[in-house]
Image 1 (cartoon, rainbow, N blue to C red):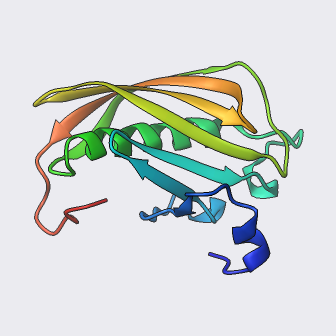
Image 2 (cartoon, rainbow, N blue to C red; image 1 turned 90 degrees about the horizontal axis):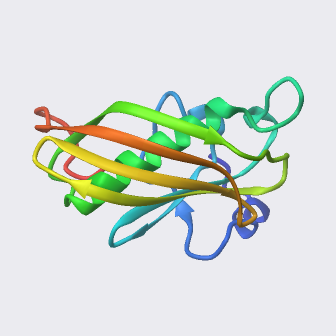
Length: 150
């Protein structure tokens, strides 16, 4: 991840470098997030590695970040006591974005239970909605050696 202050200065207030790394998302770094009581909001400044062959933001990036943000938000609401795996994910694309814009995934946890968590998110670029997503997550016991917090 870059420590260039010009990159960090271009990040909206209250976002910090994302707390969890993943082989899938490593090529998209730097990723940012901010935590609220009921959500983990993920964000990034869009760059060339986030685009498709037409130079627009790739739908796979949007889907993966929405999946992550909703899963982390379920974990946040549940106190990080369980692991969550995606059961279903639906994404509706209603706009697009270009390099240089700020993308944020804002999530609402709809319901948590002992076996299932439901969440929805809006994907915004510079505060304009470009996608919405719904996710269902299976609540699983943490495996030995799994981190207590994401």
